[in-house]
Amino acid sequence: MANPLALIGVLLEVAEDELDGTAEELAKGIEVVGDDEVPPGYAADFEAAASCPDPEERAAMLGAWVICHQPFPRRNLEIGHGFMRRLLAEAEIPWPWPYDDPEVEAMLRRLEAGEIDVAKFADWARLRAATA
Image (cartoon, rainbow, N blue to C red; front, side, top):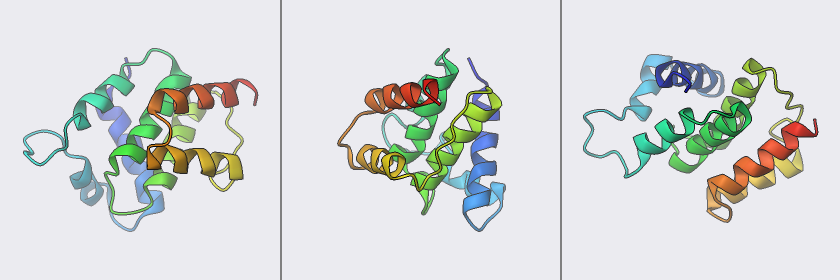
């Protein structure tokens, strides 16, 4: 299992690159402890994704978590994709497709709209990474 706090640190680094604001300010959007307004499944979904043993699936599920839960005020698609790419790079798994690749952007938007579920997105991402 990947360390959830370390993963949140990586997520905040990615978010800092996409948004104005410091990691400390951005962290307020992803607080999950002691907050009665946290949506159902918010923390549990993150922990489930973080505990996935397969690094490709874990990266895709964590990127999907950002897209589905929208913890930041804007640019969650870009942050989710960037988070996934960063985790794949750290695991030395190639992912040469940028956010603005038409197929990538379409899949991210389908995930955001609920047209596909996280499992289908993770399968797609694993297949893409395997064929890179």
